Image (cartoon, rainbow, N blue to C red; front, side, top):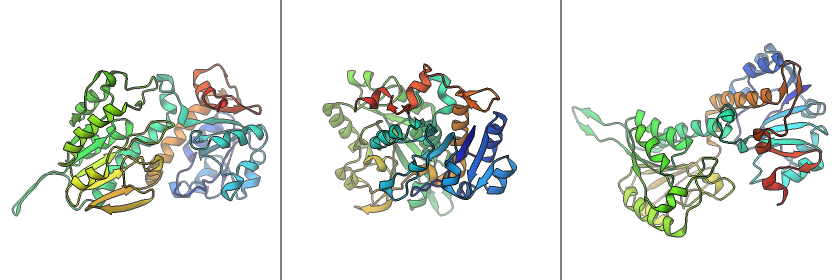
Length: 382
């Protein structure tokens, strides 16, 4: 069977779905591998390196995909309405694996089904021990949290650590992280390494121990509601309006004292919660910085704009798109390993063919379409 790695063509995307290292491992599993010419160049993976690893380099996308049994992508393929019909090039019966954004691109599932494509969305990977090595949200969010702090440092006009100099003392930056998931915890760790005084907030009480273990202060309104604030998958639930009001009041008092705020709060399948209001921005010190990692899902900050750095009330609001792709070499390496681990799970050992167990909890969690039908329970009735 043949695995194809096409070039990513969506705006702001610089990652690639396979590296020369994972190509070698696919070859060891018995697969033929074809890579589109230039697919990995932004991620420092050259055609020569892929070729040396055993891949065939193909310059024409249609030629690459027409006989591909498995297509590995970072983002979902483009459809005809988006100006380039990558989806129409997929072979009938092919397996498509990538971050397919089923919540935001629900109509694509109908196209996959109509084209007899078996599609599997890596963002839906369950948060279970057996699936940790395939968890793309964790691998990519970890890098996004790190990069968010560096982006904040770039925009901030002061140093992060306290510095004792002959000319006087430079006080440490006060930095707050909103949302203590994977991205938030990495942001805390990175900011601490840079010498900032860090605090963090989250609606999940379990986050308190994690935040404090990294040397940060935890800020949270505690109530009976917070005891049920986490889903079975480990994500934050949306809270009641009363809780949101009380939490906002506490954050409003805390945020006045901060120099930098990193926003990371997301709820799967829903718009990002608005955590930093315009009134809070007005209360912040001139020269402060807000980095909104949730900007592409509506944003945690009231005035953030996707793809832009804007300034309001003397505060810079950073809304870069696709932050993992801003650190594309490591993001590609981690994502490629996530995919390799998943393909290994669904392959017959060393036989170069698929052996999918449709009763596996992992498969049931990620499989969207198969044999012309939408089979995922969450989307089949929509």
